[in-house]
Amino acid sequence: MPQIPVTRIEELSAKALQAHGAAPWIAQEMARAIGWAEARANRICGLYYLESYCQQLVTGRVSGRAEPKITRPRPAVLNVHAGDGFAQPAFARALPQAAEVARETGVATVAIHHAHTCTALGYFTEQIARAGLIGLGLTNASPIVAPPGGQSRVIGTNPVSFAAPDGQGGIGMLFDQSTTTVALGHITMAKAAGRAIPEGWALDADGRPTTDPDVALKGTLTSAGGYKGWGFGLMAELLVSGLCGSLPSTEVKPLKAPEGAPHRLGQYFILIDPRVSDSYASRLTALAEAVAQDEGTRMPGRGKTPLTEVEVPDPLWQQLQDLAAR
Image (cartoon, rainbow, N blue to C red; front, side):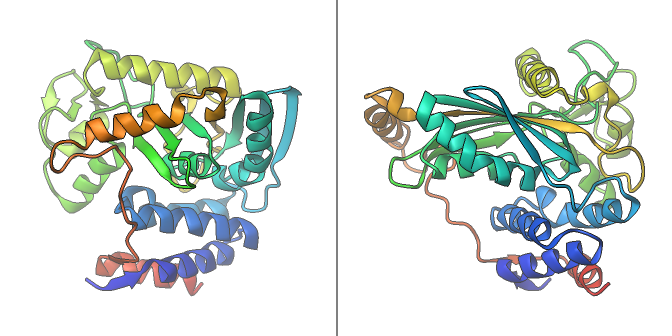
């Protein structure tokens, strides 16, 4: 299994995306997101999605040349029409204005709609925090989660991410997690590898626990913490589909299918200027110290050094090169 520099992964990813129809600036933004995920050992949101991106560029399920359109219907509200393109470039175009609005008003919201799946939400909220703002991000996905005690799929894994600045251009706290016990990608990767999954991750079509990933994909995933995770998943669903005007999870088709209707998902972000309170910096410091008082403990997302090289399985490395050589 070769060790590949993250910069090389980004270079080849951008080349692959352009070769399949993405505009250069969009390919570069998507490659940066792929590299970001790989550098954090999050392959599910990195190279795992590249082939799908390329296939859907060719079939037109995602537009690689969409120019995001930003409107500001209210002083602290930005709406971004992604044009059935990728979420990352839509966010990149909106962030400078959104940050300016948040510093002006104390808070700003960004509602992206008609967008492709955004994969890692932390990629977005980290950028908000590095701009000196508190960021909360939410999105929805194709339906795979039933209400506790039910069997009918209602919502997706519906991730939530939160990031806070440390006041020095860095990250004071960051988490990015699905509202299910595990992200869907862990199930699909287990199926591809022929591995069983731990009990508690998923239920079969009759609502019984299963360790078979194929059965799980035909059933439902469990909410993290049962009804508690279910509540957060519903919160994400309402904020995203209700305030972005994007598709509800029940209408979103499988995200990695090469052909079909555009995803038309939404991503909803809240940006808060921590300077609205004089106590933010001291409270963050005190909290970080309290969390880190035991050996081996730390604030989520703090003190992590992104990888500069990652191990890439031989078949995936060959796939990356083949996609770039098109």
